[in-house]
Length: 110
Image 1 (cartoon, rainbow, N blue to C red):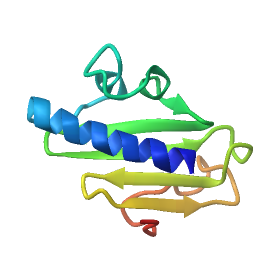
Image 2 (image 1 turned 120 degrees about the vertical axis):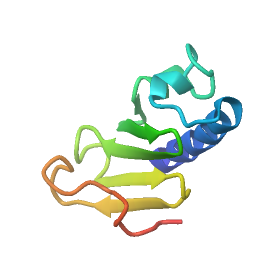
Image 3 (image 1 turned 30 degrees about the vertical axis):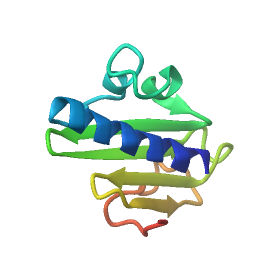
Image 4 (image 1 turned 90 degrees about the vertical axis):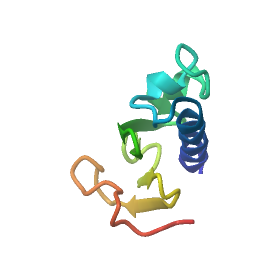
């Protein structure tokens, strides 16, 4: 659940970035304290609550990924969201690096 909350925070930060700059942030660091100051430093560094967060962005779209580290100690569900604001997940029985991580085709969770 903490990873989902972090993704929701990142969605809000990306909306703020778009509003302020006219484009989505291209990195987590850009959203952090040394950038737009919209997210805390640990999340800007890419890790929080046992998950690794990654961002891929274009000026008009973005993708956010949350992957448990280490797998399966902190979880077995990877999560994904993008500018549609739909959060998707993929449950795995093996390390997410060896299985398909959550992405655009994964089931919605909200």
